[in-house]
Length: 251
Ligand code: RET
Image (tube, rainbow, N blue to C red; front, side, top):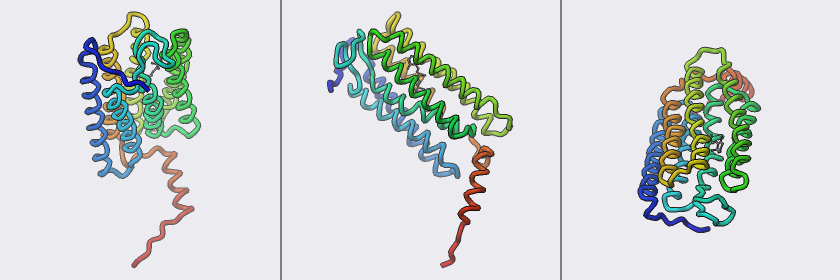
């Protein structure tokens, strides 16, 4: 697969991608370090995985991987296609939603449905971005799933009646998510109407990616309550302990 070579007209692009890689790499290590002090590891592990995927994607994009030039392979639209972004989003947006769903205590089926709708949103967006004839069809289909994702997520998170610390954090993170995720379709429209330079595109997505992943992860790991698991998990733990009583052996 061809590797993109950065041209003079794209000044600053490669440096910006590297700088964002460094932000993700540091955030990844920071979240792993913080996880040492906590009882519930799941938020740290999910968040660290999100940051690791993003760091890898930015690292390879900086070296010119994951970018198709005009007319290359299946790409027919007039300019570069950063396809590695879509692969990154296909993995990380479900994990971001999983983080929120775990915090809010959504059930398995609700969470699974939201995640599948999200994966359809990214796939349809990719079809639009990669094929000139399907730009607006891809966009339209992707928007339908986008609205479904936020609608179902909002329904699940905002309907929580318990007033615990975790429900409060889940609500704040939900609104943060709505705000930041809305910038992505906006960039898509800008790109396909007035056009953005490679550098502008990298900067726009870079800012949103850092907010959607680094800021999200830090708000989450600094604000969840270790002793405040949603009621549904507490019940599961009781059942598990009844089924498998802890046996301690004295040496
Ligand atoms: C696309 C295509 C056009 C329509 C819509 C889109 C939505 C993208 C979103 C991406 C979120 C990415 C995140 C990345 C984190 O780093 C695919 C641009 C609705 C919502 C949160």
